[in-house]
Amino acid sequence: MNLIQTIRSIYGDGPVPLHRPVFAGDEKARLIECIDSNFVSSAGELIAEFERQVAAYTGARYAVATVNGTAAIQVALRLAGVGPGDEVITQAFTFIATANAIRYLGAKPVFLDVDEDTLGLSPEALERFLSDAATAGRPIKAVLPMHTFGHPARIEAIAEICARYHLPLVEDAAEALGSWTGTPTGTAARQAASHATRHAGTTGRLGTLSFNGNKIITTGGGGMIITDDADLAARAKHLTTTAKQPHPYEFIHDELGYNYRMPNLNAALGVAQMARLAEMLAAKREVATRYQAFFADRPETFITERPSTTANYWLNAVLLSDRPARDALLEATNAAGIMTRPGWQLMTDLPMYAHCHHDGLATSRWLQDRLVNLPSSVPDGWM
Image (tube, rainbow, N blue to C red; front, side, top):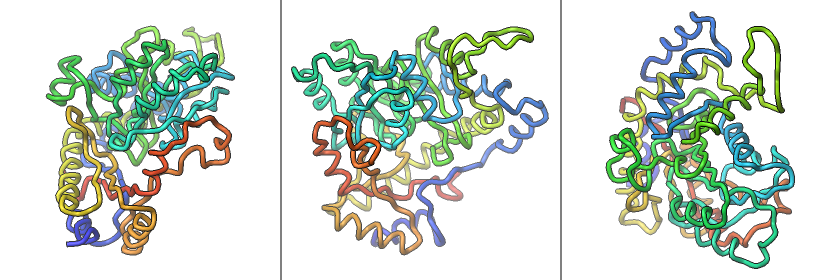
Protein backbone atom coordinates (compact mmCIF):
# COMPACT_ATOMS: atom_id res chain seq x y z
CA MET A 1 0.00 0.00 0.00
CA ASN A 2 1.40 3.40 -0.94
CA LEU A 3 0.88 6.66 0.97
CA ILE A 4 -2.05 7.84 -1.15
CA GLN A 5 -3.81 4.51 -0.57
CA THR A 6 -3.09 4.76 3.15
CA ILE A 7 -4.57 8.25 3.32
CA ARG A 8 -7.61 7.09 1.34
CA SER A 9 -8.06 4.19 3.77
CA ILE A 10 -8.36 6.75 6.57
CA TYR A 11 -10.29 9.55 4.85
CA GLY A 12 -12.10 7.86 1.96
CA ASP A 13 -12.62 9.10 -1.57
CA GLY A 14 -13.01 12.71 -2.63
CA PRO A 15 -10.96 15.77 -1.67
CA VAL A 16 -9.01 15.37 1.57
CA PRO A 17 -8.28 18.64 3.44
CA LEU A 18 -5.22 19.12 5.60
CA HIS A 19 -7.23 19.84 8.73
CA ARG A 20 -10.93 20.64 8.98
CA PRO A 21 -13.07 21.41 12.03
CA VAL A 22 -15.45 18.85 13.50
CA PHE A 23 -18.87 19.91 14.79
CA ALA A 24 -20.36 16.79 16.34
CA GLY A 25 -21.77 18.06 19.61
CA ASP A 26 -23.88 20.90 20.99
CA GLU A 27 -22.42 23.69 18.85
CA LYS A 28 -25.76 24.73 17.31
CA ALA A 29 -27.55 24.63 20.66
CA ARG A 30 -24.86 26.73 22.30
CA LEU A 31 -24.98 29.28 19.48
CA ILE A 32 -28.76 29.53 19.79
CA GLU A 33 -28.38 29.95 23.55
CA CYS A 34 -25.94 32.79 22.94
CA ILE A 35 -28.20 34.49 20.39
CA ASP A 36 -31.23 34.18 22.65
CA SER A 37 -29.28 35.83 25.47
CA ASN A 38 -28.64 38.92 23.27
CA PHE A 39 -25.00 38.81 24.48
CA VAL A 40 -23.17 38.04 21.26
CA SER A 41 -20.18 40.38 21.48
CA SER A 42 -17.36 40.71 24.03
CA ALA A 43 -19.55 40.30 27.10
CA GLY A 44 -21.42 37.17 28.09
CA GLU A 45 -21.32 34.20 30.42
CA LEU A 46 -20.06 31.77 27.80
CA ILE A 47 -16.75 33.65 27.54
CA ALA A 48 -16.20 33.17 31.26
CA GLU A 49 -17.30 29.53 31.03
CA PHE A 50 -14.90 28.84 28.17
CA GLU A 51 -12.06 30.45 30.12
CA ARG A 52 -12.87 28.30 33.16
CA GLN A 53 -12.90 25.14 31.08
CA VAL A 54 -9.58 25.86 29.38
CA ALA A 55 -7.95 26.79 32.69
CA ALA A 56 -9.22 23.59 34.32
CA TYR A 57 -8.08 21.42 31.42
CA THR A 58 -4.58 22.89 31.12
CA GLY A 59 -4.03 23.19 34.86
CA ALA A 60 -3.44 26.95 34.55
CA ARG A 61 -4.95 29.05 37.32
CA TYR A 62 -6.25 31.70 34.93
CA ALA A 63 -7.26 31.94 31.28
CA VAL A 64 -8.18 35.09 29.35
CA ALA A 65 -9.90 34.70 25.98
CA THR A 66 -8.83 36.82 23.00
CA VAL A 67 -10.00 37.32 19.42
CA ASN A 68 -7.19 35.17 18.02
CA GLY A 69 -3.90 33.54 18.92
CA THR A 70 -1.80 36.35 17.46
CA ALA A 71 -3.47 38.88 19.75
CA ALA A 72 -2.84 36.54 22.68
CA ILE A 73 0.89 36.45 21.92
CA GLN A 74 1.08 40.22 21.47
CA VAL A 75 -0.60 40.92 24.80
CA ALA A 76 1.39 38.21 26.60
CA LEU A 77 4.64 39.74 25.38
CA ARG A 78 3.52 43.19 26.52
CA LEU A 79 2.68 41.73 29.93
CA ALA A 80 6.19 40.25 30.01
CA GLY A 81 7.61 43.76 29.60
CA VAL A 82 8.38 43.81 25.87
CA GLY A 83 8.21 47.21 24.18
CA PRO A 84 9.60 49.25 21.30
CA GLY A 85 13.25 48.60 20.52
CA ASP A 86 13.44 45.43 22.62
CA GLU A 87 14.51 42.04 21.28
CA VAL A 88 12.65 38.76 21.69
CA ILE A 89 14.32 35.42 21.05
CA THR A 90 12.18 33.02 19.05
CA GLN A 91 12.50 30.48 16.23
CA ALA A 92 12.55 31.00 12.47
CA PHE A 93 10.71 27.74 11.78
CA THR A 94 7.25 28.90 12.85
CA PHE A 95 4.00 30.37 11.61
CA ILE A 96 4.36 34.06 10.88
CA ALA A 97 2.06 35.10 13.75
CA THR A 98 4.86 34.36 16.23
CA ALA A 99 7.15 36.93 14.62
CA ASN A 100 4.39 39.40 13.77
CA ALA A 101 3.24 39.62 17.39
CA ILE A 102 6.75 40.75 18.33
CA ARG A 103 6.80 43.42 15.66
CA TYR A 104 3.34 44.73 16.60
CA LEU A 105 4.94 45.91 19.85
CA GLY A 106 7.77 47.65 18.02
CA ALA A 107 10.19 44.95 19.18
CA LYS A 108 12.60 42.89 17.07
CA PRO A 109 12.72 39.10 16.76
CA VAL A 110 16.01 37.24 17.10
CA PHE A 111 15.73 33.90 15.30
CA LEU A 112 17.49 30.85 16.72
CA ASP A 113 17.58 27.25 15.53
CA VAL A 114 15.23 24.41 16.47
CA ASP A 115 15.69 20.78 17.49
CA GLU A 116 15.19 18.19 14.77
CA ASP A 117 12.98 15.94 16.89
CA THR A 118 10.75 18.55 18.60
CA LEU A 119 10.74 21.12 15.76
CA GLY A 120 10.81 23.70 18.57
CA LEU A 121 13.40 26.14 19.88
CA SER A 122 16.67 24.38 20.72
CA PRO A 123 17.89 24.85 24.31
CA GLU A 124 21.45 24.36 23.05
CA ALA A 125 21.02 27.15 20.51
CA LEU A 126 19.53 29.37 23.20
CA GLU A 127 22.40 28.66 25.61
CA ARG A 128 25.00 29.29 22.91
CA PHE A 129 23.50 32.61 21.96
CA LEU A 130 23.04 33.90 25.51
CA SER A 131 26.53 32.82 26.64
CA ASP A 132 28.21 34.47 23.66
CA ALA A 133 30.08 37.60 24.73
CA ALA A 134 28.74 39.37 21.66
CA THR A 135 25.21 39.01 23.06
CA ALA A 136 26.05 41.07 26.16
CA GLY A 137 24.26 44.39 26.16
CA ARG A 138 21.58 43.41 23.64
CA PRO A 139 18.09 44.58 24.74
CA ILE A 140 16.69 41.04 25.05
CA LYS A 141 13.46 41.10 27.05
CA ALA A 142 11.81 37.68 26.53
CA VAL A 143 12.08 34.21 25.02
CA LEU A 144 9.22 32.93 22.86
CA PRO A 145 9.45 29.24 21.85
CA MET A 146 6.72 27.47 19.88
CA HIS A 147 5.33 23.97 20.43
CA THR A 148 5.37 23.12 16.73
CA PHE A 149 2.51 21.04 15.29
CA GLY A 150 1.61 20.09 18.87
CA HIS A 151 4.99 18.53 19.74
CA PRO A 152 6.24 19.94 23.05
CA ALA A 153 9.56 21.74 22.85
CA ARG A 154 12.22 20.98 25.48
CA ILE A 155 10.51 23.57 27.59
CA GLU A 156 11.95 22.62 30.98
CA ALA A 157 15.50 23.09 29.67
CA ILE A 158 14.48 26.37 28.04
CA ALA A 159 12.87 27.52 31.28
CA GLU A 160 16.02 26.74 33.27
CA ILE A 161 18.13 28.82 30.86
CA CYS A 162 15.63 31.68 30.98
CA ALA A 163 15.73 31.63 34.78
CA ARG A 164 19.53 31.85 34.84
CA TYR A 165 19.51 34.81 32.47
CA HIS A 166 16.48 36.45 34.14
CA LEU A 167 14.41 36.41 30.95
CA PRO A 168 10.63 35.99 30.96
CA LEU A 169 9.45 32.85 29.16
CA VAL A 170 6.31 33.20 27.02
CA GLU A 171 5.12 30.02 25.27
CA ASP A 172 3.46 29.98 21.88
CA ALA A 173 1.26 26.91 22.39
CA ALA A 174 -1.16 27.89 19.62
CA GLU A 175 -1.00 24.40 18.11
CA ALA A 176 -0.64 22.46 21.33
CA LEU A 177 -3.97 22.14 23.14
CA GLY A 178 -3.81 18.60 24.53
CA SER A 179 0.01 18.39 24.51
CA TRP A 180 1.85 17.68 27.75
CA THR A 181 5.34 17.49 29.21
CA GLY A 182 7.14 17.64 32.55
CA THR A 183 6.04 16.72 36.04
CA PRO A 184 2.60 16.57 37.71
CA THR A 185 1.13 19.95 38.56
CA GLY A 186 -2.44 19.23 39.55
CA THR A 187 -5.42 16.92 39.49
CA ALA A 188 -6.73 18.09 36.12
CA ALA A 189 -3.34 17.58 34.50
CA ARG A 190 -2.86 14.11 36.03
CA GLN A 191 -6.28 13.02 34.83
CA ALA A 192 -5.57 14.27 31.32
CA ALA A 193 -2.18 12.61 30.83
CA SER A 194 -0.79 10.25 33.42
CA HIS A 195 2.88 10.26 32.37
CA ALA A 196 3.32 13.81 31.11
CA THR A 197 1.36 16.25 33.12
CA ARG A 198 2.41 19.83 32.58
CA HIS A 199 0.38 21.23 29.76
CA ALA A 200 2.13 23.10 26.96
CA GLY A 201 2.00 26.80 27.73
CA THR A 202 2.05 26.46 31.52
CA THR A 203 5.79 26.30 32.22
CA GLY A 204 6.57 29.95 31.50
CA ARG A 205 5.05 33.03 33.10
CA LEU A 206 2.57 33.20 30.25
CA GLY A 207 1.35 30.88 27.51
CA THR A 208 -0.94 31.32 24.54
CA LEU A 209 -3.39 29.08 22.67
CA SER A 210 -5.25 29.38 19.38
CA PHE A 211 -8.76 28.27 18.41
CA ASN A 212 -8.59 29.12 14.71
CA GLY A 213 -10.73 27.05 12.34
CA ASN A 214 -7.86 24.67 11.63
CA LYS A 215 -7.04 23.85 15.25
CA ILE A 216 -8.10 20.73 17.20
CA ILE A 217 -11.03 22.63 18.66
CA THR A 218 -12.21 25.88 17.17
CA THR A 219 -14.14 28.98 18.07
CA GLY A 220 -14.01 30.16 14.46
CA GLY A 221 -11.39 32.69 15.46
CA GLY A 222 -10.03 32.96 18.95
CA GLY A 223 -7.09 32.65 21.30
CA MET A 224 -6.29 32.41 24.99
CA ILE A 225 -3.67 33.67 27.42
CA ILE A 226 -2.98 31.22 30.25
CA THR A 227 -1.01 32.00 33.40
CA ASP A 228 -0.74 31.18 37.10
CA ASP A 229 -0.25 34.86 38.01
CA ALA A 230 -3.42 36.60 39.19
CA ASP A 231 -2.06 40.07 38.52
CA LEU A 232 -0.99 39.20 34.98
CA ALA A 233 -4.39 37.62 34.28
CA ALA A 234 -6.24 40.70 35.55
CA ARG A 235 -4.04 42.97 33.48
CA ALA A 236 -4.52 40.76 30.41
CA LYS A 237 -8.27 41.09 30.70
CA HIS A 238 -7.96 44.85 31.23
CA LEU A 239 -5.71 45.36 28.20
CA THR A 240 -7.88 43.20 25.93
CA THR A 241 -11.03 45.15 26.82
CA THR A 242 -9.62 48.52 25.65
CA ALA A 243 -8.22 49.25 29.13
CA LYS A 244 -11.65 50.44 30.22
CA GLN A 245 -12.20 51.06 33.90
CA PRO A 246 -15.42 49.68 35.43
CA HIS A 247 -18.07 52.42 35.74
CA PRO A 248 -21.87 52.42 35.49
CA TYR A 249 -21.89 54.90 32.58
CA GLU A 250 -18.61 56.80 32.08
CA PHE A 251 -16.02 55.79 29.46
CA ILE A 252 -12.74 55.82 31.37
CA HIS A 253 -9.67 54.26 29.70
CA ASP A 254 -6.49 54.52 31.72
CA GLU A 255 -3.89 53.34 29.16
CA LEU A 256 -3.48 52.14 25.59
CA GLY A 257 -5.53 48.96 25.36
CA TYR A 258 -6.83 46.68 22.63
CA ASN A 259 -10.25 45.58 21.45
CA TYR A 260 -9.06 41.97 21.66
CA ARG A 261 -11.70 40.30 23.84
CA MET A 262 -13.26 37.12 22.39
CA PRO A 263 -16.95 37.54 21.43
CA ASN A 264 -19.52 35.45 23.25
CA LEU A 265 -20.59 33.83 19.95
CA ASN A 266 -17.12 32.41 19.49
CA ALA A 267 -17.00 31.25 23.09
CA ALA A 268 -20.28 29.39 22.55
CA LEU A 269 -18.54 27.23 19.96
CA GLY A 270 -15.59 26.75 22.29
CA VAL A 271 -17.70 25.51 25.19
CA ALA A 272 -19.36 22.94 22.94
CA GLN A 273 -16.07 21.89 21.40
CA MET A 274 -14.36 21.40 24.78
CA ALA A 275 -16.92 18.72 25.61
CA ARG A 276 -15.55 16.59 22.74
CA LEU A 277 -11.86 17.40 23.12
CA ALA A 278 -10.89 14.02 24.61
CA GLU A 279 -12.60 12.19 21.74
CA MET A 280 -10.92 14.40 19.15
CA LEU A 281 -7.50 13.82 20.69
CA ALA A 282 -8.06 10.06 20.75
CA ALA A 283 -9.15 10.03 17.11
CA LYS A 284 -6.16 12.11 16.04
CA ARG A 285 -3.82 9.79 17.95
CA GLU A 286 -5.27 6.85 16.03
CA VAL A 287 -4.63 8.66 12.73
CA ALA A 288 -1.02 9.27 13.82
CA THR A 289 -0.69 5.61 14.81
CA ARG A 290 -1.73 4.54 11.31
CA TYR A 291 0.78 6.88 9.71
CA GLN A 292 3.48 5.63 12.06
CA ALA A 293 2.73 2.02 11.10
CA PHE A 294 2.92 2.90 7.40
CA PHE A 295 6.30 4.63 7.73
CA ALA A 296 7.77 2.05 10.15
CA ASP A 297 9.54 0.09 7.41
CA ARG A 298 10.16 2.97 5.03
CA PRO A 299 13.13 5.34 4.69
CA GLU A 300 11.05 8.44 5.52
CA THR A 301 10.87 9.57 9.15
CA PHE A 302 7.47 10.14 10.75
CA ILE A 303 7.64 12.74 13.54
CA THR A 304 6.56 11.13 16.80
CA GLU A 305 6.31 12.39 20.36
CA ARG A 306 9.44 12.26 22.48
CA PRO A 307 9.57 9.95 25.53
CA SER A 308 7.90 11.52 28.60
CA THR A 309 5.81 13.85 26.44
CA THR A 310 2.34 13.60 24.94
CA ALA A 311 1.81 15.28 21.56
CA ASN A 312 -1.67 16.13 20.34
CA TYR A 313 -0.64 15.30 16.74
CA TRP A 314 -2.39 18.43 15.51
CA LEU A 315 -0.60 18.21 12.17
CA ASN A 316 1.20 14.99 11.34
CA ALA A 317 4.58 15.47 9.71
CA VAL A 318 7.04 13.29 7.81
CA LEU A 319 10.64 13.99 6.80
CA LEU A 320 11.78 13.07 3.28
CA SER A 321 15.34 12.48 2.13
CA ASP A 322 15.79 15.83 0.40
CA ARG A 323 13.91 18.70 -1.22
CA PRO A 324 13.27 16.94 -4.57
CA ALA A 325 11.70 14.01 -2.71
CA ARG A 326 9.65 16.46 -0.64
CA ASP A 327 8.41 18.26 -3.74
CA ALA A 328 7.59 14.99 -5.51
CA LEU A 329 5.39 13.93 -2.58
CA LEU A 330 3.67 17.31 -2.46
CA GLU A 331 2.95 17.22 -6.18
CA ALA A 332 1.67 13.61 -6.22
CA THR A 333 -0.65 13.96 -3.24
CA ASN A 334 -2.11 17.32 -4.21
CA ALA A 335 -2.67 16.08 -7.78
CA ALA A 336 -4.64 13.20 -6.26
CA GLY A 337 -6.91 15.59 -4.34
CA ILE A 338 -5.12 15.09 -1.05
CA MET A 339 -3.93 18.29 0.58
CA THR A 340 -0.39 18.16 1.91
CA ARG A 341 1.89 21.11 2.51
CA PRO A 342 5.54 21.86 3.23
CA GLY A 343 6.74 23.43 6.45
CA TRP A 344 6.65 27.20 6.59
CA GLN A 345 9.24 29.31 4.86
CA LEU A 346 11.78 30.39 7.45
CA MET A 347 10.99 33.83 8.82
CA THR A 348 14.41 35.07 7.72
CA ASP A 349 13.49 34.23 4.11
CA LEU A 350 10.57 36.67 4.21
CA PRO A 351 11.24 40.28 3.19
CA MET A 352 10.01 41.84 6.44
CA TYR A 353 12.36 39.67 8.55
CA ALA A 354 15.34 39.17 6.22
CA HIS A 355 17.37 41.75 8.15
CA CYS A 356 16.86 40.15 11.58
CA HIS A 357 19.64 38.54 13.57
CA HIS A 358 19.83 34.73 13.41
CA ASP A 359 22.29 31.97 14.28
CA GLY A 360 22.60 30.29 10.88
CA LEU A 361 19.48 28.11 11.34
CA ALA A 362 21.13 24.95 10.00
CA THR A 363 18.55 22.52 11.40
CA SER A 364 15.65 24.80 10.53
CA ARG A 365 16.74 24.93 6.90
CA TRP A 366 17.34 21.18 6.84
CA LEU A 367 13.78 20.65 8.07
CA GLN A 368 12.34 23.15 5.61
CA ASP A 369 13.84 21.13 2.74
CA ARG A 370 12.37 17.82 3.96
CA LEU A 371 9.19 18.25 6.00
CA VAL A 372 5.69 17.57 4.69
CA ASN A 373 2.48 17.87 6.69
CA LEU A 374 -0.06 15.11 6.04
CA PRO A 375 -3.87 15.22 6.36
CA SER A 376 -4.65 15.25 10.07
CA SER A 377 -8.38 15.90 10.53
CA VAL A 378 -10.60 13.71 12.65
CA PRO A 379 -12.04 11.38 9.98
CA ASP A 380 -15.78 11.28 9.30
CA GLY A 381 -17.58 8.76 11.49
CA TRP A 382 -14.82 8.45 14.07
CA MET A 383 -16.75 10.39 16.73
